[in-house]
Structure formats: C-alpha cells, structure tokens
Length: 324
Ligand SMILES: NC(=O)c1ccc[n+]([C@@H]2O[C@H](COP(=O)([O-])OP(=O)(O)OC[C@H]3O[C@@H](n4cnc5c(N)ncnc54)[C@H](O)[C@@H]3O)[C@@H](O)[C@H]2O)c1
Image (cartoon, rainbow, N blue to C red; front, side, top):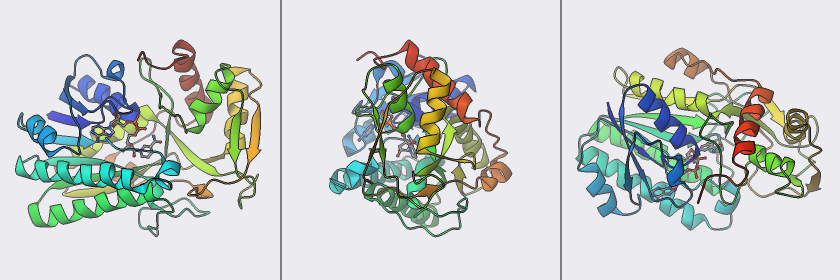
C-alpha cells in the first residue's frame, strides 16, 4: 500500500514508519518538524514537510495519491492543554479535520487515527472501549472530537477508519527512541536523571487513591504500538471501522516505574514529591481484549523492565536525544 504517515518524524510515527517500510509498504512522512526530528524519519521514506493546519500544505501532499493515512501529528502535552487549550484544539482537532476532508476528496480508502487513553476519565478496573468516555483534560477532548468526526465521515462519505487509543507509549527500537522537547513522559525523564542530565524526577501527587498514592499507568512498548497500526490497516480491508485500546493491561505506579529505572540503570535517581498536576487521572489501565481478538494483536515486550532496558539502551547511545 501507499501510506501517508503524518507525524512520522515523531516518536511513535517514526517507529511505525519503519515497521510499514519493513512490511513492504511505500511511505511518505508528512510533518512540520515542530516536535519531531528529521533524523528520526527512516531513510527509505519520502518526506513532505508541511503543516496539517494548512489546507494548502495538505492538498499539495495528498495530490500524490495514497491508499491509507496513519495520522499521528498532534500536540501531546496534556498538562499544557490545560493552560493553552486553543493551541491543542487548533492543531489536534482542526488539523485533523483538514486531513480528513482531504482524505475524502482524494478517495483515500483507510484512515488510522492516534487516539489516547485520555478520552477516558480513569477508573480502578482495566478500561474497556465501552466504558464511559469523559476526558479530564483538553488534550483528551481534542482527540475525542476527532473520533466523533471520523464516525460522521464514515456515515456520510464511507471513509473507513480505525481509532487506536494508546495508553503510555514507551521504550525504543534499535535506532529510534523517545525525544520530546520539553519531555513530560516519566520513563525518558527518569532516564535523563540516571544519566545526570537532570537533578531529580518529580512525582506529581502522592495522595491519589492508589496502592502507594501515586498515579498508575499502563506502559506499552512503541514497537507493539507500531505493529497494531499495521494490523489495523489490514483489518480495515474487511471492516468499516474499529476502535481499540492498546495497552498491556498491567498498571505501574510512578514510584514503581522509578524503582524499575533504578534497578535497570543501577543509578540512584533522586525523586521529589510535589502536589498533583491538573488533568491527571488516578488510574489508567487498558483492557485490550478487543485488539487481541479483532486484530490478532499480541504485545511482544510487555515486561516493564524489558521496556525500560530498551529505552535505557537508546538513551545511553543518544544522551542528548536526536541530532538537532
Ligand atoms: N506518546 C504517548 O504516550 C501517546 C499516548 C497516547 C496517544 N498518543 C498520540 O500519538 C501521536 C504521536 O505521539 P508521539 O509521542 O509520537 O508525539 P511526537 O510529538 O513525538 O510526534 C508528533 C509529530 O507530529 C508532528 N506535528 C505536530 N503538529 C503538526 C502539524 N501541525 N503538522 C505536521 N506535523 C505536526 C511533530 O513535529 C511530531 O513529529 C499523537 O497524536 C499523540 O496524541 C501518544
């Protein structure tokens, strides 16, 4: 297939681009490099630099003709979305609308969308796709609106779409790893502390109703996320829509992640306890039964220490992240 990957210079998009190329697809990456890295785009991919908020940029890239779009491009900082929501609605929701409109106009058959666990409010039990949808931050709301738009575009224009709701992406493949600026994700942050690039890691909130008072999340390896996108593209040959959670179904608290990092790196990793941040749910753990059953998806690197090790290997080789 000829696949357009928006956000293919970013963390999950670059790993998925590499997986699509390995599977024999022709890939064009569309990215404005706002948070992504030119060096992360696999060499065998074509690159179209542009912005999803620009109808002209989107139209000129789409003129090439694609069988499918995998749409990663977005701003991802839930905390920042609670300070500047407009920035997020404009990029994540309006940008996605430009892309979806253009996909329909150019007869693109399949559209796979990066959604998020942030569409759920969070609950004690693993979350199923049918559980209540109630974002606690504006970022989650931007993604939910795109999910809703896709449902209308299927009904009205017949666009086939897959919604993949990722829990916490983490880990690295040999060449490709996580390098966000600024970084807000726990695993890269603790590894930067391990490398001496940061003094300490902050633990936001120790009074949540969880086993040790810190937030619990489901950590899923980026290569396992990538494989789900390939399966979703295949599944859309036979199905008109699919919506699946992607996670391991095991939750780890912030303290447990910091402890795992201390174990894997052999470094002390000082931590500072601070008050809660707005927009953080207490517990977000996936029930990914549907992805297993519908897509035949089976995560290959479910163990937190293996995930941590892959991230540590990459960080140790790239202490400053990608070349800028
Ligand atoms: N990282 C996670 O844990 C996680 C969890 C759930 C969902 N997601 C979703 O997965 C997707 C990818 O996340 P990531 O961690 O790889 O983020 P990332 O920031 O590494 O990648 C996003 C990419 O999109 C590009 N981009 C942003 N705005 C753009 C625009 N207007 N036009 C063109 N390109 C633009 C950036 O330059 C970057 O390369 C996002 O949609 C995010 O919401 C991520």
